[in-house]
Length: 292
Image (cartoon, rainbow, N blue to C red):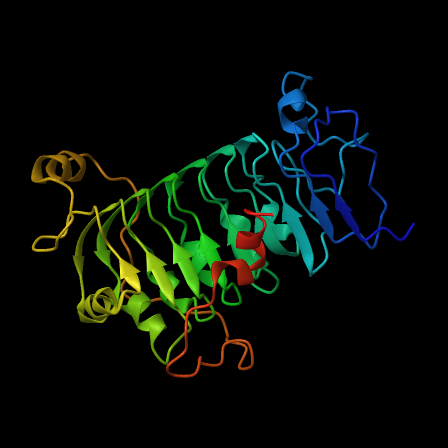
């Protein structure tokens, strides 16, 4: 068989209505947005890897799934599917280039194995789920990734120092979580010659300070820190709300002062030209999937 793209959006598939797509060695994209198969999977015992019917994609299904063996260039687009449960612990051992699981009910932490996708992952969309736990240091290893959107979740902790390694990132959204501490100036410097950052959204968290590079980005409209706890800034949370959150015990590790970044690919991570204009969201694969 030579099927490369399977698109079955806006249907009402049940768990055993979708044909078995395992063994399709050329398949690089499974798009089943707005289907209802995820809901029908729950309550069918403990086998959530679905080896019999739902598109197997060489071993990668979301929900309570295993994810391994996908080729570079693969896209897993499962927005708006009412998916629940954690991201698979081994998702990083896939070779996905595009991962979009927005607007579901996924829970638990972002797996540390995500670091293993550093040679393949170009765009990642996790927005509007219920992901929790500490913001993982391993995300900073994704030096080829241009879109990292984990907004509107329940993530907490400081921004790890490793995020200063994200030399290819153009869109970074961590808004609407419970992050705290200082916004790292090293991260904000990725909007300069050190990187390609065009939009940094950190609104709706509990950050308490920014450095000079970040202050400059706020003035330029690149960095959004509204509804945080930064003294002297407009549109921040109230003092009582900030004090209540900041007085709670914190269990996430503090951001380290130094970090060793992965070896950079000179071509991929070449600095963006000065005076660049931020791309339209629709020009990114994962954001385009939200509106198709």
